[in-house]
Amino acid sequence: MLEASRPLFDQLLSGREDVHLFAVNGFSRKALAFLSRKGVPVRAFIDDFAVARECEGLKVIRSDDLTGDELVVVCAMSIYPQSAIARLKSRGVTRIIDYFTFYLRFPDEVVLPEFFQEPDAVWKDIGKYEWVYSRLADEESRQCMERVMNFRLNGDLSRMQGYTENLIGAYFDPVVTWGSREVFADVGGFDGKTTVEFTKRCPAYRKVLFFEPDPNHLQKARASLRGLRDVEFINKGLGAREGKVRFEQTDGWSGKVSDAGNIEVVVTRLDRYLDAVITFVKMDVEGYEEQALAGGERLIREQHPKLAVCVYHNQAHFHAVPETVLGWWDGYKAHLRHYTEGILETVMYFIP
Image (cartoon, rainbow, N blue to C red; front, side, top):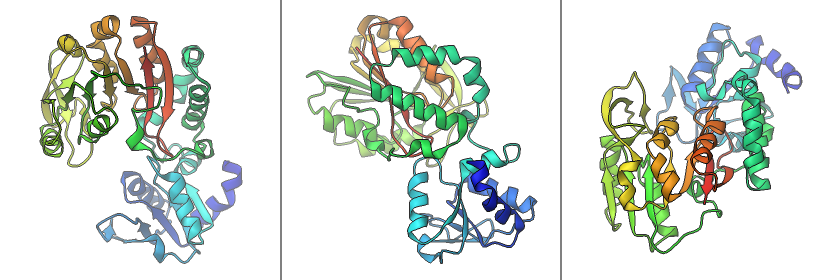
């Protein structure tokens, strides 16, 4: 992969090419800073959805403005990297470097998300990953693990060919089936879209417990879910014990528990809701999944609810989450699914 891209990198570093960065985000800004240090001029950012028409002193243009002669570094990698590359090719652009290859060429100077750059941790615990692989309940799960792990270890975007964005379907794979009295715990409720989707798929539900520690997001969710029945809004996060934690609050994206957080939020335990008889738990809490699960040990041991848990925020969660859950109740069947073209939304299901 790197060898095949060598001529492109030679052209990039020559400083004589019409270089553009696709996507306005934190990683394209870091790529711009790196290229500036190398003396490589960048002409513009490309972003079809950005509102601002300027970033870091450069123009932000649309892909329709391209001539085809540009050399483009694609910095869209969370959800739509394949679509971004396809869009560029449709505009006649042939010289394209994806951000993962860009990182592999300059690993000491270009950054990836923290949870993506931990290959040593995988090899150190390879036996644990092999155990998880042996416990996966279907061939689709095993293929998913092979492809996603290879992508995360090697940065080879071709491993993600065939995956498409299906965020609306995340947490609702067909392995999840519904009864007539479902109680849904939306852990990390954010904007409420997952709860809306649940109520569409399971209109006979009994109740929704909506957990969201960020008061701003909770307020927005209350408004968007106003028309739904039997939703209990809980302005708390979930953890291993009761208390308060620092939380990194953001304007438009999901926040996370962090020692450097700018606000303090209340944390409770899932086991406090045993009387609700929760039947389905969705958990997307930006890397705090192990702690949130720890507070629900009795629920999992005694009531065996269906679980849909994000495992992509922390590399170790690919083995730590199933070790925890199956250690408490071995009767679950584990399934793994992935819901974007890039690094986001790998979900592990536990079906009783």
